[in-house]
Amino acid sequence: MKEREDPFDMVVSMTPEKIHHAISEMIASGVPYIDALITYAEKNNLEIESVADVVKKSSILKEKIRSEAVGLKMVKKDEKDLTDIVK
Image (tube, rainbow, N blue to C red; front, side):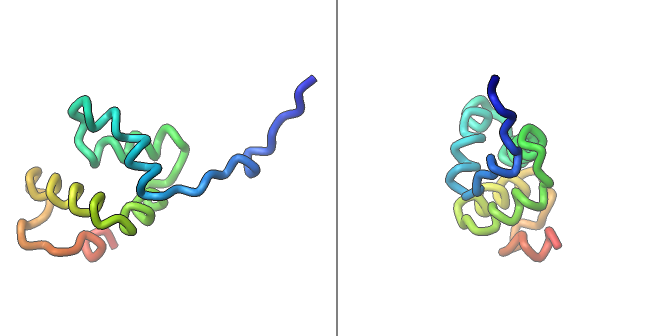
């Protein structure tokens, strides 16, 4: 009989690269970055703030999200840094 694994032993560290890889199929099928990140957080039982903390470390992901937010008129075009808005 197989022993049940402790869920705390299965903690995997998130990196911007791992998150981007995990959401790449959704993005390729036309899902916006913001929606893909929310779905990723929900599927992995993560708080969106935890995902945001990792995304903030990636200038590429931050810029893609900022560009998307500008296009959706969620932020002004001249906003430089989303970390001030997210707080």
